[in-house]
Length: 413
Ligand code: ARG
View 1 (cartoon, helix red, strand yellow):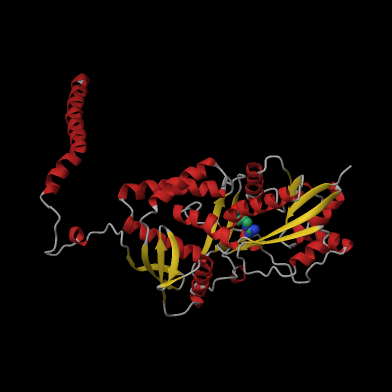
View 2 (view 1 turned 135 degrees about the horizontal axis):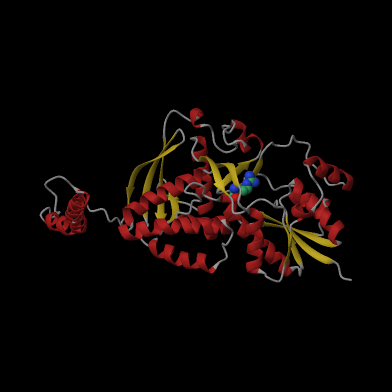
């Protein structure tokens, strides 16, 4: 019988290294690894060698950073998508893209199945598998962590030693960390107690606001149709721009988030995030929308932002609803062009100025000086009609109540 061929989403970490060997043993399979770079700073050197040593037949490394930024991060930014009004979803946005890269290799290499290293109680397994189901319904998905017998890190390390898989001698971090260009997600260890403040050693890309410089940093961000295209009057490639904002933001203690969130699988979990660039860009983008969006569009879009965030968080990125919402969002972004100057100071982002060729702000209407062109008299008639329903409601009720009370009194007598 022909051997099963499985493509594994491989990070180079302990779990996925064990998976490579474990699939060979338990599925009698030929294993191919696929590793995607999403702009994380953690070095990917040595990953291919490790994959081979773990038993991979073929090893694929792909730089997905540009695609991640333009096709996943920017649509989410334009939509204003923050899960539970807070989390910019670095992890959630990465999963559908990694699944897509995995599926592409699996199809090309004629694999019968794909596998991933997500646990059985998280959101990531859902995002991964639902994405594969949407992109390649014919592919089987294997989730070894839901199946295998290992109960601890130590047992996995022992398995590696038995099979000659290299394990790093570094002390294991007490945290589970996922990182890419849009942010870092940190959980486990002491963070599992929501009453415990996150210790400094949980953070890797931001300084504590307390230790940030005593002088603010100013950055001017240029947007074109809802996406950032330049910094401080200089046009910039999107990846370089986000890297730069991560650096400046991180140095000023921007983007630390501490969140008790509702997972799709029904658990409340506490996670800490670091997302300097995402925090600054969402803030600046919102400021520019305040200037350029029509009131009704702006208010309506706020409702859709929540739905859009839920779609990303809940793993249905490749859905017709997300595409339809993109249609709406892109229409709203046509005039979201201009400059936003932000002040970064000890963990805070403040607006220090905004301007747009499509600004709807009319100084002549807003001013309290002699330049004023607003028709003050027109307000009188407007208020009369606008307040009429409330006036009528209360008048009628008062009269009715008076009559009813009188009638009741008479009855008692
Ligand atoms: N809670 C986040 C999400 O579901 C991040 C999950 C991964 N976190 C981690 N520390 N490995 O998107």
